[in-house]
Image (cartoon, rainbow, N blue to C red):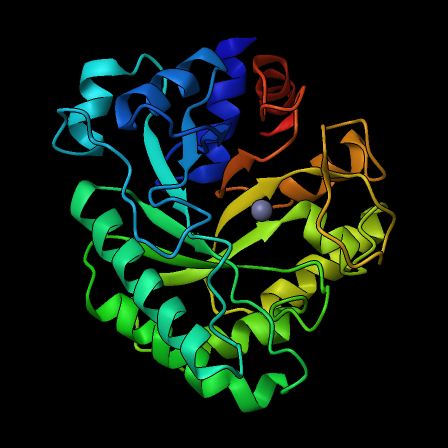
Length: 298
Ligand SMILES: [Zn+2]
């Protein structure tokens, strides 16, 4: 069974490599500890906060003696193959407040520079909220900060995450994500991270096969080819179109396993790595959650 499953996966993926499944883990204690936590939950990919997620002071994760990700993986990991990071939630590139924009741009540039310097593959970013100023009015400054962050960094992708659409947050539609991606000279380092809970809360009904097909058609027609590079696989505590960001354990929420599987296994999404950000028992994804995901993600 195992041999056949991996053969089928290779057939689907061609030469793009094996799709990794994992989860967000705490970075407490430094990079090596975070990777060890990933191993403990059976993750092949881990997501961390490489800079403290709550403060403006750009506090970097401790490398604790390692030079970077490759070094730490070869010393510590039994299963983890890749490390991605999530940018601070404080960052708001769309804000009409000059001071907040300045601090946000600076922290994003620092996060990207540091991530690239230690071998993190990609940084996931919530663009933020325009707070009534209007998406189109704020779009040039959003692109400006993204361009600056790409210009100061090397070897790391920046992935824009779709939002649940709460309070003027940017990125609840693929058109907005495409608009952000389109105006930046990225050298191929700018893409999208699709969060399955935010998508559902934003009002995309993918509970049926027709719904999945409609969404996949929209990806195909709106996003640049190759833009989708990461999936945050989460069930939802809230109903379709509720416009709030509330993750639930897989199979325990309003979306359910069948719909999540139908979406992530669609041919357009099938070469994209999968990261769980589910609550578990309160400390994030557990081994049973990652194993459950691995059982249905082809
Ligand atoms: Zn997410």
